[in-house]
Image (cartoon, rainbow, N blue to C red):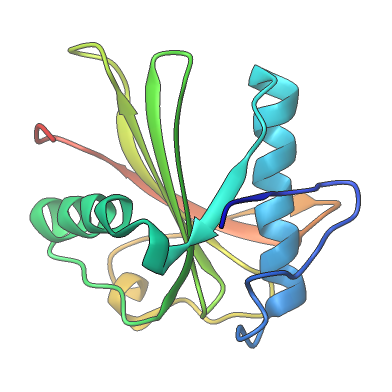
Length: 154
């Protein structure tokens, strides 16, 4: 069942098993606010078990581009198109959020972004490969993020 993320009244619905549930809910709400303000898009999520094709797409890109396998349980997924971009999000139990931005047009922007919820450690599978910049957020406290550019065709 899909759930429209409310960034005014932040809810932990669907994220309860995370040890950083409040911070992860804030991070998810931060993403919802961004898409609503920039694109007038309502950010919706579904349980990861209900969107295996979206989860598989993100996992495939991570594996083929950088040989990364995330060692945390995926809780929720969001997939949508906005402004010529195909967006896929996965929110993990550890507090990690991964997004894949893939331009539909040839030669457009294509990247994978990682965001860490406040209070979580950098996952071992990412720690030695990426440096994380810090960003303040009213909804999520402090977000640490990094990214890489996708080189392949998906």
